[in-house]
Length: 494
Image 1 (tube, rainbow, N blue to C red):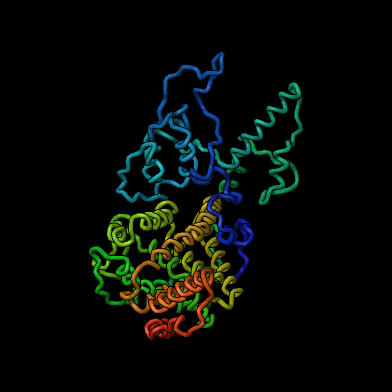
Image 2: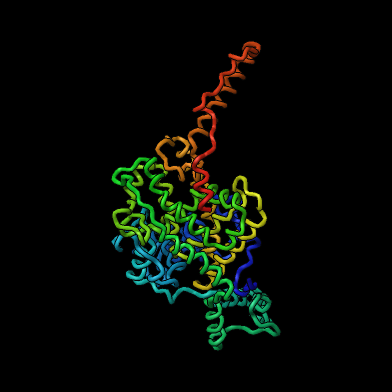
């Protein structure tokens, strides 16, 4: 793969966010404060009005102002309309993207108030435009630099008593040294040089086309995903009020399609069969959750693959009944973050799915270096794909957010695993038992060994351990682990 690093931010290892297991924003923000989501930034802008102080340090008595978007307390005009600081910051970040960048899952009828203003970006941005906020008032990076430069020059002029300052200020020198700016001399931007600002603005929004080998690698996994949808399995499991056991069996078709997709990826087929099985078994829950984001229909609030019948759709209400409210809410929060908040398209989600598949820390993986190499390759492909679709400032914000979702999904994996350990595995389909490691004989034997060991330890504390053969019960044939009859099925499709 060609380097293709032009226009791409250097994050070091592309998965450093993932392996550091950070749950909050502990990394440097490459995209700048203005492009971060509301909950990742503080209000750094001084109020625009109504902050005069009285003689005793109290606020002047002025008529209260309220935000035209959400009704919160407002301090004054922002972008030509009265708005609160939160909506001011929201408008600055999102207005340049335009309404078409966002989607509303609720037919664009969202009510805007302080408590729910964060839930729908499209309706909130539309309300901003309706009250008269103007995106042309938002300063570009170049205009901000010019403004800071003028402030610095005025400060120096004031401090020197009006003496002429040198033509080249320190801020302009720093600008000339920045990557991507021509060196030699001190080219000051001013209103008399509009072409300079136009060129810089164009460069700031320039997309990075994919190299042929990058595009081919992405097309390979996207094509593999689409071909896997042709895999059909007739299921007679009830979908009216499914139990957790029935939900596991319903997921069998998705597991078969994931396996079928992986078989069509050359780098995955290059692995040994044991490593293929280890990656699929270790990442099955995470992959299924990411895959559910692709199949989620926010209008109908249901999950359905495009080739399946409408009767096979799984609604959110059915999932809530089967999973329980706690696990369901955690899962849906993850789904909505990717599908609605980040607006991740199908290609982004397939790349995330592939990155999760190539996790070298799965149990019993032998060729960890090769798996890690492939994971890093697909992480870079995700970055390159974003750079080909979005301007640099959006890519710098979106890329680390997507990688951090891999940390969130690890936490979801643990919660799902805890629930699966409590269900009765007798009614689970053979393939799902093997993939999810739900072999009842294995679990029964493990429980027997744990109980037996605890009894032996307790007996050794109270009295000497018995030496008669009858003291150690012999496992019955039903308790002894037998070769998993399900494993040949899993191995045969890998």
